[in-house]
Amino acid sequence: MSAQPGIEILNLINAIERRTTARMQRLLREAGVGLAAMEARTLRFVARHPGCTQSDIVRASGRDKAQIARIIKVLRERDFIAPPAGGGRRPQPLALTATGTAIHSRAESLRADTARELVAGLGPDERSQLEALLGRLSPLESVDQD
Image (cartoon, rainbow, N blue to C red; front, top):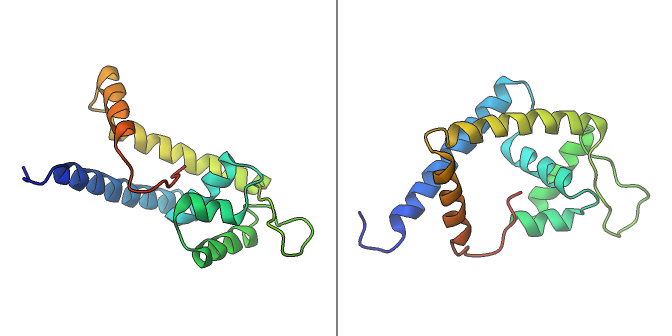
């Protein structure tokens, strides 16, 4: 156990995040979903926030504008999100297409499987307690990981 408060908890959280991200990437690849991890996160954000803009995704993800612009371009080219209506420089609302909805649904099913496996060794009370404790951790900055 480290003498620095919270360092072991941070190490565990980082290890869990790395393992679950790697697992999700493998499952997405094996299922032929064809999404990279950040593409799946972006698609999830648009699904959960219909009408959001690229700027909303940048703010929520903490990623840089250029990276999100590239991801949105790829998702639009693959017909997963609706191209902006109209044009101009105003922020354009984003929404899933029928294809995007189907892909998102498949990716979320794999995500749910991974989540169930992650907490399989915990009882219902332990899961509730863990969720409550994690919810009380003080984030370094406000980033919505939808």
